[in-house]
Length: 178
Image (cartoon, rainbow, N blue to C red):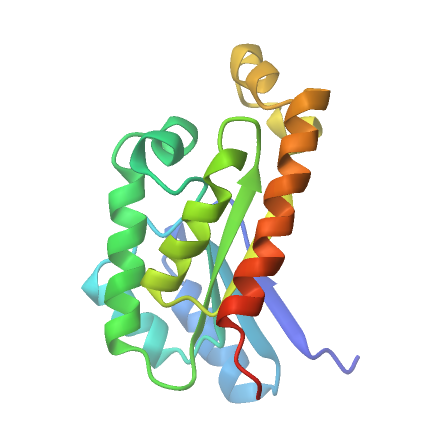
């Protein structure tokens, strides 16, 4: 088939007891680029070492706020600390093979934090950021009260466009020619 990339997503891939065996099999028997998406809450020192040993190419971690209150509202109490601790730990032990990325689902609850989020991402040492627009169809498990807070008003959309311009300025400030 000539496949070049495989993505393990979820739910949470690290809930599988055999996830590392599967990834190691793929890395040893193919030339595919392996990406794992995670919320980062299950990454302790043992899991971090397994990530390195399995030679995962890219880890994409969900972080939906620049501060704990925002992220924890969406993902659960204490998850911001677990996720950011996991990223710091991985950054200390990773070598050239693992790249780290953040996924940020943009909603009216967090869009004003994007400039602060960029600084947080830089401090955490991640390699890329993926901004994902909130889509109501993905919320079948959430309470309607949360869904209603996640839909942008016209004013919020206009403010978001101004913030997106700030992303370009941030990139110009920190972008290094290759």
